[in-house]
Image 1: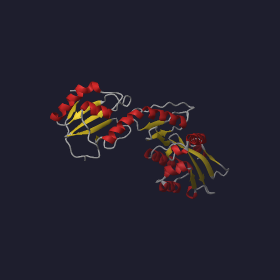
Image 2: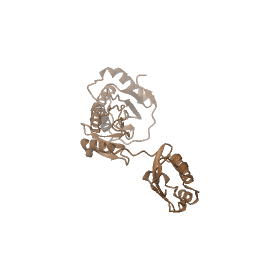
Image 3: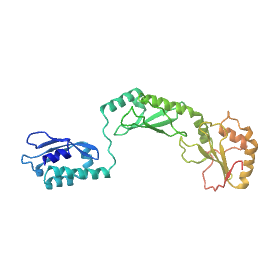
Image 4: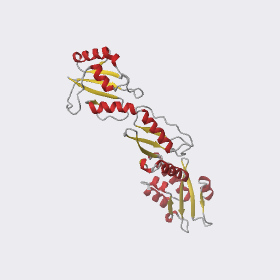
Length: 308
């Protein structure tokens, strides 16, 4: 039995000559789990005690009765360990993959970087210290959130970053980079989009927006009510927010046609130094209804593309 136990579990070793105390690791699906087994003097498994690491306890949650039963019924330690491994394999397949604990250097590095960045910027951090949400304010006072998912080998591996933006988020990272540098890069990205958000904020505050109902900072489209069961759908380019946007007039054909004609005739009047809303008023020669004076009601629109 002894040779078979050592052969199958080379990391689980006896700690005394009586071989009543075993300590070490058992390996399941290429993962090592710490455990200790205390046998009575007669070395019968019925009186054995099993001590597990917290990872092993977590994995065996819900299987405790099976483990106790196997301790009572297994013929020897070798057969018990074999059945315990079977239970663990079932547990690993039925539960999400447990992350290995990062080395102490990971946590000290993270704490050091957060100290430099400022704890006041931290909105959230998960229990594994892998996912962080940082709050960032741009020069116009808009609030943004940068989500960072750190890799186990941080800072050697680049983290995954995401945010509510109308353009792909591209941040550079080297093994020498820090969260503070990442934060600074994100601020520059936000500043490059200030004019875009200024354009849309003006539209949102001064017109009756039909879609989207709750715009996010990533949305580039607005459907604006015009009146008489008509609306205009505009798609603003985040990189060139004051240029003529892609436009679609929506409504009954006999109502849309005059506005389409005006748009085509006055397109040359578009001033890239003015806001999109100001230009739309001039080009279409209309005044948009404000959100304060109109109620949203059920309106049926027919889709017609401007310029057709």
